[in-house]
Image (cartoon, rainbow, N blue to C red; front, side, top):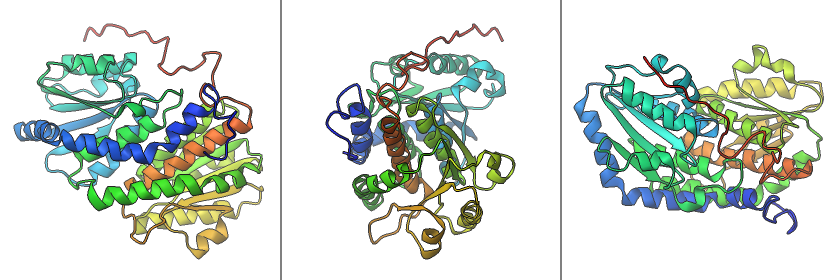
Length: 391
């Protein structure tokens, strides 16, 4: 698995993280199957809420990776222009510290909480604040832990529903991998007007399986370059996905690799100053023909940089110009049919980001399963004080 040795794959080293990355395509199928079994109750709940109000806010929320889950899917769902439903993403950390900047008393709101453990103090507090501040307040909890506080709090509540991902998505390693993709897939499938089933899901799952087996050679090629900085770039929802990819590298390298993210267009406006001869730039190429023009422009620009940096491009299908400009090209579609949306690509692109962080961690002599043994960061955040909100 990822060309790691048996010793490296032992529990407590890289074993949990490697398996949790590798299992994802199969887990996606299981997640969709379980969601399909609950489709009548879940869709019925949402349709009832939509029908009651002239306008409904759907706020995706979470902290860290769980926040980036909402950031990634909100643009894709907003683009579908769903009648009276408005999608946005706000981290629980922003909600808890500034609740009246987010919650509006007279705006019916569905708070969609992403949570691996369901016990993060900000997640629990965000729900309490929404209940207090919004007249028509509803909850959808998407969690990997049926025994977490968020899931328990929805029991018996007619204004709430909970979807628990398959048990395997509750990552044992510190960094979120399976949990991230299973939760964004569940949320997208729940809220989209275009069913993510049948041929669409089969294409993504099949390509995910192929990619996991094929990309290790490219990752090992990249690791021959002794990089100390990595910059993830993308446009639209792929620019948001870049945030999660950068966090994976930062977490699994214990901060030894400086990892940042930016939009393809925004990179020129100051952040480009981070580039040096120890840098890798990873570009998540959009499938949208218009957006792709801007991605190609920044690719040409960074490829022309004379510092000696390395350029990696993830794309649905490689072409002659991309392969000429990039040092490493990773095409994620191995079939005959095209992947038509950036959300489909996002599920595949993040596999590369996770696996690259895993192998860089091992290369640095760090345990990916627990890259912070001193407790500087934890699987469930600690040290948070939640203050009473008086209003």
